[in-house]
Each structure stands twice: as structure tokens, then as C-alpha cells.
Image 1: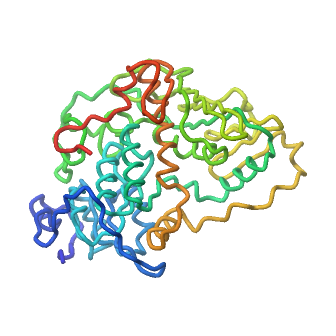
Image 2: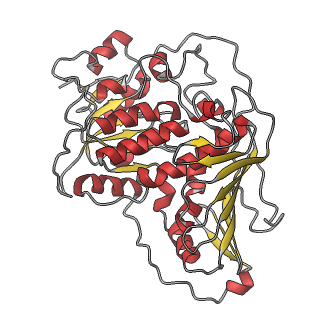
Image 3: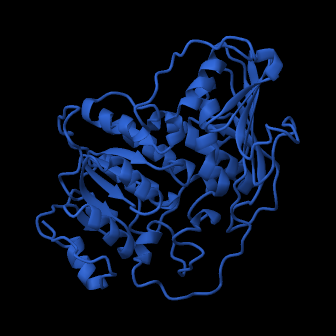
Length: 438
């Protein structure tokens, strides 16, 4: 076993690598492309969990799986990793997630890295037989999302995306109202968030890389560029190289609600209604995107419009109690329904004030992470498996593709390409530097 770290001070790189066991004997290389059989566990057994990315959102995820057996931790920053190691002294520690995935006794993996390394970590984890919990969006590009989704289906592993709000009671009550027909047929949905990223110029200064940071590993599959604190650790969502701005960050959270309630999957098209000029490096600080979804069975087609950076639908009141910074507005032929993470209101309020609510048909969640952990042990379902969250992630990212391609995208989800031109291809397909292919 790797000896416990006795101090939280920054370790020298050589000392840390020795603790991390990057070349330790006894951890065999798992280089195969086929998944091994998972251990047979009961609900009372403890999973052996590896966590890739242990700071910030990763720390939150780690705290939610901490009651399991944490056997491996990985982070590209030695300081973050040493702090996590103090809490889980029995765990092997790594700077390179590829070495973590070589550790044979891991049942399940949490991926909580920036978007640009989701796919290379998640796909390899699935291929080597592990169940996977991955932060949203599922990946940085549509092609990567599809690769993860197909790997999960091919290897039949238990998956969950990090849309924790899905487990809340409020979303369940909204879905029940929509599906009970309280506001009638819904052909129009508006989704808006106040968040804003981007609108920046690529940094020119090239300060030294912090001693604690393995910067080349942080870049992973992305073509090399000089280090900047404008990228890591907190600001990577501003840049196309690493993320997708507000739409990639919050699209899976807020678009999750209409996707769930209305049974939406892939959009037929995406078109930018309004936005600042396209920047080759940086994401748009505000944008309005319109998606068209097909009819589903007896349900009519749906037009979903996304807004971020302070833009909101004109249908919202300009003052009063409903001027929410972020939310979802369902427009039905019998009324409207507005919701955010924790509250919802039927409109007009006078009409619905005394109308009895439908009986609760969606059971309360045991917890978003607990759903996944229990399913890993028992083989049961999760509510946000990659089969569901893959199309959700692809739809969110399609809005960014339309923006960057500067054209309406007529989308063929089966072939994963625009049918009205090839300009979008470069923003759909991932391109990796040597050594980091899927």
C-alpha cells in the first residue's frame, strides 16, 4: 500500500510521483479494448471507487461517494490531490488518470475533470469494465458525446451524468403536471440562465506553470498552448478549446426538465436568433438559440429557445415575483408553467389556484449519486443514464455548433452531421493531439 501522506504541504514533484505510484510495481497495464466482467455485489457491499478530479466539483462528487471504498484518486494538481489523500489515506493516488485506470480493483469511476478530458477518461473507463459517473455536459464535442454513449451501450455499464437537480422533488412535480396535461399541448418552451462566460481575447502573457500543476496532463487531448491562469483552474469554460461557455455548462441542467417532461431527444435543427460576433477562441457571453424538435407519438413538434447572459423570453413579466434570473417556461394551449431548480408556478395563477394537482406518480429519488451507486451494485436503472443524457448533451452542444458555423443547422442525428452543408463538421468532430485518441 502507498504510505499515508503525513503533511498537507506541497510535495516536491519527485516525492509526489513516488507517492502516486506512477511506476509502482504490482499495478498491471490494462490495455485491452474489451470490458471485463464487473464484480457481483449486493446492495450492502461497498464499491471500489476511483475519482478523477478531486477539487471543486470533483470534491463535491467525492463527498457524495465517500461512504463507499475510495481506492484511487487522481488530480493534475499535487496540492488538491494531497488534500484529498489526507481524507482517504488508503487510496492510491495518481496525476495521470490513465494510470488510475490501470489499477485492477476499481469497480466504478467518477469523472469530474474539465469538459475537454471527459471523453478520453470516460470511454477508457467503460472499455476497461468500469461503471461511470461523469459530470455534465457529457463531453466537449458532439462526436465525443456519441463515443461515450455508444461505449456505455456496448459494454452495458451503469452510467449517470452529473445533473443533480434531476433528483430534486421540484422537477418531478413539474414533469407530473406537464404529462398530466395541466397546461394542454405544448409546442413552445423557453429556457434561460443568467450565467455568462467568454467574450475574451486569448491571453498573450506566458507565466511559469505552478510547481504543483502537471500542465501537460491537464491539457490532455487538446493541442498544446502555453499555460495561463486564464485557463486553469477556474476559467476554462471561457474557451472553446476546453469547454462551451454557459450553454455547455447549464444546458444539461435546465434543458433536462423539458427533455424529461416532453420526451425530447435529438433536435431536428438549431439556429442562432441573436448573439455577439463569433470569436475563434472564446465563447459568447450571451446568446439566443432556437431548436426545433419533432413530434413524438401523439405529442406535437416543439420549438425550444435558449437564452443566456441576461437575455430572457419576451413572454416573461418585466417586474414582479416571476422575474427569475434562470428558469424554464412551458407554453401550453391551456396555460403556462414556469420553473427553476426549486420552485414552479402555473400561469395564470388565478386560473390554477384552486385546481387539484395530479397524484404523485414519480417516486422521490434516493439521491443522484446514490441512484448510480446502488445501480452499480444491483443492476437497477438510473434516471440520467448516458442513453438519456447523451442526446441531451448533444442537443445542448448543437447550439454552439450553429453559433460557430454561423448558419442554421439541419441536423441528422443518426449520421451525426448537418445535412445543409459541411461547415459545421469541424465543430462537431473532435481532433486530438498524438497519444490521446479515443
